[in-house]
Image (cartoon, rainbow, N blue to C red; front, top):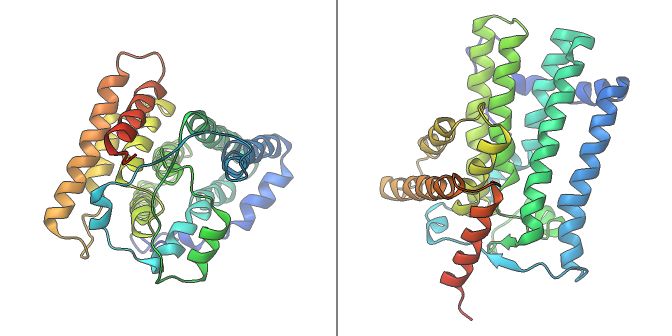
Length: 297
């Protein structure tokens, strides 16, 4: 679970029960319809897509996107709770909105669900071009890790939806909190809690070896287009620069190398994307180059 981060006088988002959001969704037809579409997209563009490949129902190439820098982040299976908390993490602020606004929270629920649906659709477009994977460690593990390895074929690494959704969370809810008229103290507490939690979850994708450093830059690049003029280039760079800053299990030298790689790949994709009609084009070129440069065949 992500740590509670606020001033101490405001009830932390981490204390809210997500069941309220599910009940709210079932109680409001407009939200329910959006949620139904979202679930359909997740099934089609995430679960069925990779299970279809696993069962050899499709022939989408699978490319290994491991990077030597991934080894600089130690394998910590105990962080799997935080990794798995990412769904509840983005739902809890919706609970707050329902409690604060009642029925007036419906537009916020609908808008957020539309945006997260778009994340899965856009990522799914790339996954249909090339799937990607990383090597997952054997040996030391726990039941949650075993569960993830059992149900996740691990073919959809680039771009990381975990990281993409963290960018959505810190961007969308900051805007929502400002709009609903809560106090500055509450806004600051909630925004700080969400930002710290988003960083923690984004970092776990490397700690539990579900992603590569490459997956992070690709995700933030995608979000600059999905959340155009909201999640800015500077927001993405700031997020990168804050990653692993509090980690005591990674050397300063390795932190610097990881940071440089994340920034360099993000910048490369941005520069190439500036001359393209679609955000996905430079990412397609990158993964083909990556395969050609790293293939041992």
